[in-house]
Every structure is written in structure tokens, then in C-alpha cells.
Amino acid sequence: MGYPLNNTDNTLQQFTDLPPGLLDVAVENLHKLIPQPALFHIPGKRADTLFISVLLHGNEPTGFLALQRLLQKYHQQTLPRPLSIFFGNTQAARLNQRRLDGQADFNRIWPGTALTDSPEQRWAEQILAAMRRRALFASVDIHNNTGLNPHYACVNKLDNSFLQLGTLFGRLLVYFTHPKGTQSAAFAEHCPAITLECGRPGQEYGTEHALEFIDSCLHLTEIPSHPVAKHNIDIYHTVAQVTIAENISFSFCDKTADLYLNHDLERMNFTPISTGTALGKINHVRLPVLAKNESGDDVTSRFFTNNAQQLVITRPAMPSMLTLDERVIRQDCLCYLMERLELGER
Image (cartoon, rainbow, N blue to C red; front, side):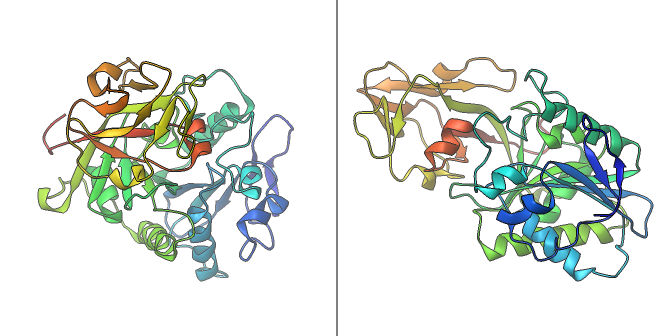
């Protein structure tokens, strides 16, 4: 697998060549080639490097599949610009899980995280340090949604270059600064950085869309710095993350759970919902969810109430990342709530 740029047990493994078999290995077998998180550097014609991270969540394979096709396309050719690739949670990918029990979330470990010290955080710090030593063109983190969502890009800064890069993927963008410790937020301090949300896993269009975007980034001379035309962008601001407490039971099938969620919940994603919309039935508890704003403040009462044992929205909002996957809800959150952001607002 080429040769490692470092080989001590306490440091992230970095390589200058890709492992044999990578171009056709199934994602569930990737751990056999890359058993732990690793960073690979592939040379290219230009001076500045495109950084790509995939499989930060093991059940989101589209980024890996897109990269695999890209590398097949340029097999035995020099890339248009250097490419550095971080392969994240290959062990969770083996089992098609977001993360394994006891593992940190690989998209909450990056510099700026509120989590305590862990081996994963040290890896993330080393990746950022290694990439800062290179001329960075842009950073792209590729994900899937477990729920029914359109394709969109996320940015952590409203700079023109970030917005231009995002609209290269599509007109739908989401601006967020919470949760902390995400890959895109860490790289945003050093180069234009975005997260791609490529729909559900297993959809051919998601893989092709991500592939086209990466290939375009490899060929760009520069990222435009002028403003994006307003008619070319729809941007939303994440104003709250909604979670369910560990001691609260929830279910889509058990009517006796503390929170019995509506079966069509994910159809609300990226759809404006009005005051009074119910997300589910409440049993045994007063309010089973916690909403936090970008500063981490409790804003539950601004968005939710218990109305006749129904969990009801108290103000207009647009949810994203609602899913019917109970394991993902427990490991991450119930949803995010967004509001439309007009360009010029900061």
C-alpha cells in the first residue's frame, strides 16, 4: 500500500499510494484494505490540493463509491490536481452502521469539538495539521441521509467562495455552526469547505452527482469570489438541533413509548411546516425532546409544546434529516430546524 509517511502506533497512518484492490472492493470489505482511519495523498498537476473525506459515518457509502469511480477514471493518469483522501470509519462500514457502540461520531471529533480527548480526536488534529502543510484548494466531506431528503450542500461560513462551491453541487444550501466538531467547520478556517448531502445510500444518482462534483473541483482553476446571484441559490439557516434524551423511550411502532412518532415524519424534510403541526404522541412525560440553538442554549420552549399529549411545533419552521431509523435518531438527533436566509443577512 505504498509506504507510510509515519508508522508509529500513536499517529494517524498516511500513505503516498493507494492499496491494491481499492478500485473494486465492496465498501463492507474496505476494512480489510484500510483497517483503521487513514489519509492518502495522490499527486496531481496543479499545486493546490483537494481534500476529500468519506465514510465518517459507516452507513453512508456514496462518497466512497464516487471516489472509487473517480480513481477508476484516472487509473494510470495524473490527476488534474493533487487529491488527499481520508477514509474514516471503515469498521462501522463493515456492518453498515453510522458508528459502532462505544465509538465517537467521526463527524464530531474535529478541532472545535466539545467532546473530551479521544484517539479519534487526535487523528482529526493530525489530519488538519497535515493538510495545513499543503496548499489547500478546498475541502469536501461527503455524506448520505438516512431519511427522505433532497441533495444539498452545507456551509459553515457565508463567504462568497463557500457559497460558490456549494452552488456547484446545487442551488439548495444549508448554513450551520452547530453541532461543533464537524469536519467542514474545522477546514473552513483554512479553505473553502462544504459538506455534500447526497440523498439515501444505494441511489445511483447520489453516486453520480458526487462524482461529477469532485471531478469538477479537480478541474477548476479557482473558486469564484464574487457573490452568487440570488436566483441561483436557496439557502437555509439551521437554528436548532432537536434530540431525544437517553432516558426517554421513543418508537414508530410501540404506542406505549414515551414518544410515539408519526410514521410519515420524514416526508416533512425540507417542507415548511406551520404552527400546530404534530410530530407524535407523548406518553408519561411532559416534553420528550430538547432543542438547542447554535450557542448550545436550550430553546425547546421556542419550538415545541405538549398540546393534549401531542408533540406540537409552536412556530413555522423547516425540518431536515428526519428519519425513520431509530438507531440513527438515538446516535445523532431527531432533526434540525431551519429558517430561510436571504443573501445579505448575516
